[in-house]
Image (cartoon, rainbow over all chains, first blue to last red; front, side, top):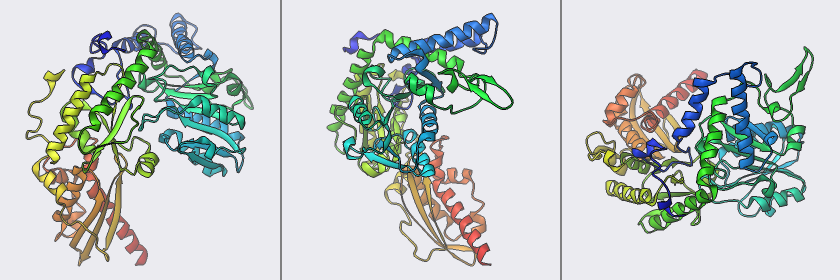
Length: 390
Length: 140
């Protein structure tokens, strides 16, 4: 995609007027239309959903459920397969908690070495509690998958390396062993077109705030027949169909997993965000994310003392260090030049420390509203960092 | 967009002042004390910085202080300056050190995230003192 095709995104994303924002892997910016959609809820039809028998409640319910339909069609799922959570982390915790009820001692869970803490810690803790075996693969899942494997939970795109797992292949191999496949797509859904049916994954988790939506809302996709069988994760209002003093009947999916009043404005905002992404086109976004990452790689690899950790064909980001300079210092000096990047272990400590052998790294992560000019500024910024620490 | 960049970004308000960079590049009191009375490792989970502090006491006074660690310029400079600051001081005085005094010592303004780097060495020292005192209590 040609950058020129794009309009001036600083109209929709006013922050771009002030900052070269290269921290999209942490959270994306929020366009005005999404802020407006959420404001409309609070200003015009603020009401609780699925219970209030008045016009406001009907309008709020309608808008909330419309978002579910949009999100379902966005990833080629059915609306009943879309559970709203507060983010990828909650989606994955829900799965770890609910699915582990059926696991027994000696059962195995397979993860990749690239996992974010949110797809590692829940499984690690449940494995300890129930004496399950946790296995990690680096390149080839065949090294660790066995007949005892019950769950395979993998990142779609690594938030440090920008590497995309071959989800379709992993799903095939897991299903051969009758294991369930879970995908942490926090870094995937924002950048590539997803078709859950084609990938044939059992569950897929993602966050709204990394794809133009607000913070505090996320999605868990699950195959209908699996969601139906699963036990709820949280108990409370909305998730029940009938309650007596002794017993409770669960509501239908997906409502069974949405206890309590949800983030109504957030869900509506996420629905609007998806419309915005579709207007731009996921194919264009995928191309732009890759092109920017490639351009950054080409530019940074020629700078002396820059060490790059992410892949050459990284999906949407570049991770690097300047030899002898701590990532925090690089980020702080870039910030002085109004360039926002991330520095640290990226919530993937095992990968950064044990695989990359780094204490921390700098990450510049891109989205479609970034330009090659932003990367040129990053390059200039890096040169200034080197001057200061020379 | 570019108009908003502060042209004086290397000016007085910058945190990468010469004294900070000097302490980072040439840390004072770098090393270990084998028979230290206080020994503790502090970790800043935000960035993975670690500081290991060693303190030797005599009659309630700090006679020697050393540190080892990995970290950004702020956390290393802060540890280097802190060891210089506490040597020769009474432990009771050192226990009263405040965040403000560390900021003054560094001579820079730190935001809510970065202040954790600046305070890592002091918090490591405080926790080390607590542990030593708890152990002493058990022994007495």
